[in-house]
Image (cartoon, rainbow, N blue to C red):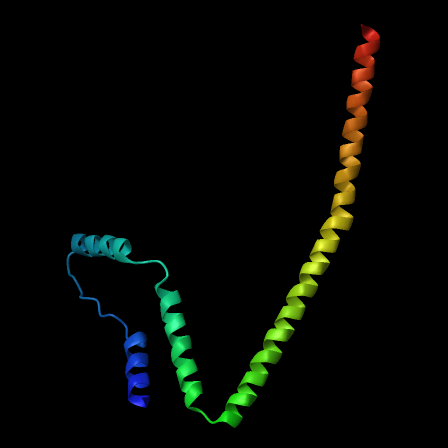
Length: 125
C-alpha cells in the first residue's frame, strides 16, 4: 500500500520534460502548440488527487492520531464558517441599511421632481 502511495505521489509531482529547440521559429511553434494543448483544470485534478492520497495516508495512521486530526479539522471548519457568516451578515446589514437609505432618498427626490414636472405640464395645458 505504501509503495502505491509513493509511486502515485511521484507520478503526480513529476514535471514533464521539454525538448530544447535551437530555432526561434520552432520555439514559437512549440509554444503555440503547448498553449493550445494545455487543459484548464489540470491543477484542480492534481490537487484532488493529492487530497485523496493524503486521505489514504491518514487512513493508515492510528485511530488516536486520526481523532486529534479530525478534531482540529472540525474546529477549523467551524471557525471558518462563523467568520464567514459574521462577515456576510456585517456586509449585508451595511449594504441594506446604510447604502439603501441613500439610494431610497435619491429615488424619492427623482420621483418628486417627476411629479412636479407632470403637475407643471398639466397646468400648462
